[in-house]
Length: 194
Ligand code: URA
Ligand code: SF4
Image (spheres, rainbow, N blue to C red):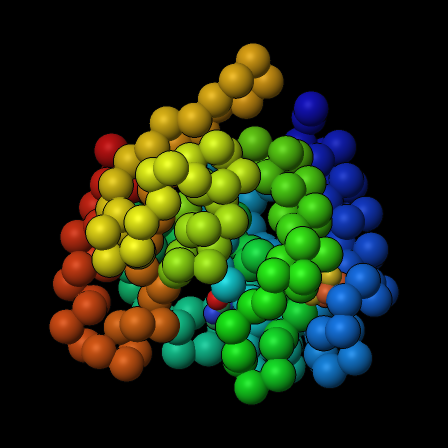
């Protein structure tokens, strides 16, 4: 698929998300957050769900966790125009509570279409909820352990139609609660340099 077509197709999904009422989060969100970045990015990052700032602006990772994320990207010579970033849920859960299974079920077809269109070489789930969804989606449920065990590990998945490398990371927000986590994230991100 050429880049123009991908942009058009992504915009169609964005429009569907903007008016989506498939789960109760549609009642409390202010703005859905679709995602942002290069339509043919080699790397897609998948966070959890919009927080307060993202819900206000409609942009992914625009609060403090986003600042940590940008520092990590920059540390490996990347910026947001070169990658794609989105979340498993497009609407903010009230008070940033954990995503619920029925919400993940309702929302992730959007994420799956994004991945299909962008067709990234590398998929990086950020945090345990996203890790669990991505690992299960690609048949890696038997390898799924706590994020503290598998962060920074590399998994190859593929079939006749698609091949990806999956690298789970801690969620960048952990470094905002615990400064000691930043160097761990920074070290994991180094994998993306190669
Ligand atoms: N945390 C997330 O998981 N996603 C965002 O977009 C912002 C914060
Ligand atoms: Fe629709 Fe997803 Fe928002 Fe729920 S979270 S209303 S499924 S876009």
